[in-house]
Length: 288
Image: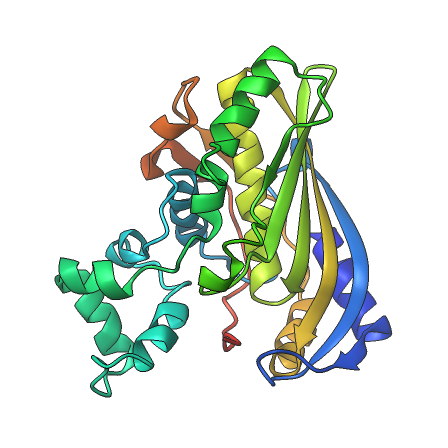
C-alpha cells in the first residue's frame, strides 16, 4: 500500500523529535493526507499482517453505540484492554492482578465487567448519542434524502464528555461526500500512531464507507485520511524500517454479503475478505 509507505518515508525524513503524553518519545510531523480509491482494492496493509477480525468487531461495537469492552473481550479482541486496566489499578478493588487476569475477570464476571470494563463516553456513545443526537443514523438518513448536503458529518469530540473518557478520540471527525452516485468519506485524525493505529484506522473507515454506501445504495468512492499530529513512537522505528524493506503485495477485495438498508443489521459474518496476502505480523508495544 504505497500511500502508507510514503507516509512512513515522509516521517523518517522530515519528522522532528517530540515529547508525548506517554513519555515514550516520538518523531512527529503536523498535517498529512492520504487518498485511497476503493476501486483499486480494499486498503489493508500488506507489509505486515493486520488483524482484520479486530477491525470488524471494533467497528460493529462503535456502530452499536457500545463503550464497554466486554463485547470485544468475549470475541478475543484485545486492542482496548490496557485502558480500563489502568483505571482498575487505581481502584480499591485492585489486588495486583495482571492484565491477563483482569481480562479473564471481564470474561467470566458480568458484574465486574459492568463496573470495570467501561471506557466512558468514547466513540460509540458520541456516534449514537451526542448530547441526545444519534449522529450516525441521522447522517445516513440525510445521505438518502439530501445527498449533496455539505453537512454530512459525525463528530466524536464532545468537550463536555472528554474528562469522562478513558482516551479522548484520536479519529474524531468524519464527513461523507456524494458525487455522481459515489460515496466518499474523509476522516480527520488529531493523533495518529503510524505503526499500530493508522493501518487499523485506514481499514476501519474504509469498511465503514463500504457499509454506509451499501445501506444508501451508492457506489463506493474514495477514503481520504487527514492526519494532524502524525507520529512514530521511538520504540516502533525498527518495525517501520522493516516494513519499508518489504515489497507490498496486491490489495485484497472486501465483499459485504448482506443486503440491507439498516446499518445496525450488520454482523461479523457479513464481511468476506478475498485474496489477502501479507508479510508476517510485526509486534510493537502500545503506548498507554
